[in-house]
Image (tube, rainbow, N blue to C red; front, side, top):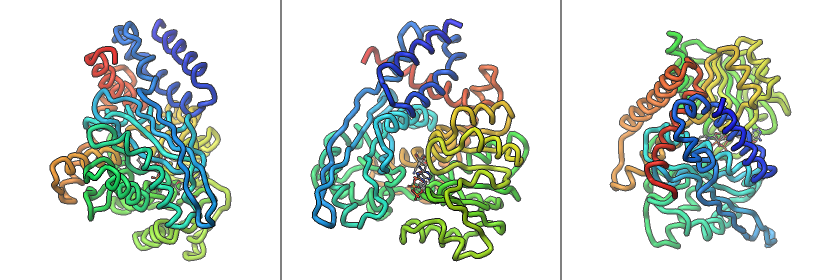
Length: 449
Ligand code: NDP
């Protein structure tokens, strides 16, 4: 009871001190609520104000990003880097370029990243960054000029032992290339200050694939707890970007059939399933031509396109939300359950609203929260940092084995921890407590900093 009061007190303080940062409130609320059993068992966290310290970023950087567009007009965007927690390693987390980016979204993502990185077993602190810049519809030249201006400020805050950004929504290989190029020019150093780099210049094999592949590996462990495999399962994936594409690819390899994909304009349904050839077409559409998913239904006439629709009313066994936060509403969750969906693995960060999560847990379906299920991306980023530090390159087989090992360990650790605290099968509680305890103990051992 005492720990619940403490959690409420901290939550009230966070809402009061961080007004209008709704996504941050949501992420913190979800985590703090699930930590109650750990606080009961370890009262010294409370005595040492661990929650107050844990929810306050170590550093918040906001900066102006001026650039000139193709019509010679001056544009001004806002850049962010939230260096949230460095108790267990250098700050680490992606950069997001999307018009919706604001302080609350950056802080929610940075906060989640602390626990996610702790779960990987690697030495990485938590961070996130980005800008309200919208790469959609911009020329390559405009994207390059923006990235260069962004890095002219960011470079002074990052470094291989300080803070190591990577990609996220709107930041793929093209943007990483422009960002790293400018970083190298300013600092005159070629080092591992950014991950997600091209294979030609220091990137790790399987980094592009890692989040999607890792999410499916995680879900495979979830299925194993019921003695099941992916063979013949019908899956629905939202989004059609990096995470979605490689989720579909691994699902194909494991014998599942993906029947839906989406983007921010709508969703497609393909009753025959998206096979490797169709997936290659989607990759070309999204990564090269930068087109819309509606074109899929023109290319493959047996499929259908639904404008302004999400894919959650498509009957399926397994759902992989892989687009953005809060994309599964309570009603979407009800629809998924009604249609027989019994596994949800989050490729995206916080894609389910709290009421949807509650429904999944109450109905005891297999539910893998993002900070565990999508940790494969940052895990392979950690492996990229290790390779860069030694100026070596590991083989695809080695990195894939490592990724599978890490995803199994993240699953098993979350599962064991949940069971240990009396919540068998609840991976939300398991992942949050396991990640928190690791970081909290490191914070205590390092004193009041
Ligand atoms: P991409 O930019 O490659 O793809 C994002 C996809 O989601 C696109 O299809 C995009 O559609 C869609 N999308 C974005 N915003 C919205 C929205 N508001 N409503 C509906 N659809 C939307 O990003 P990623 O695949 O890298 O990231 C997807 C999710 O995975 C994010 O939540 C990210 O934080 C998370 N993640 C990513 C990791 C990574 O390694 N990349 C690691 C861990 C988590 P459109 O093209 O129309 O914008």
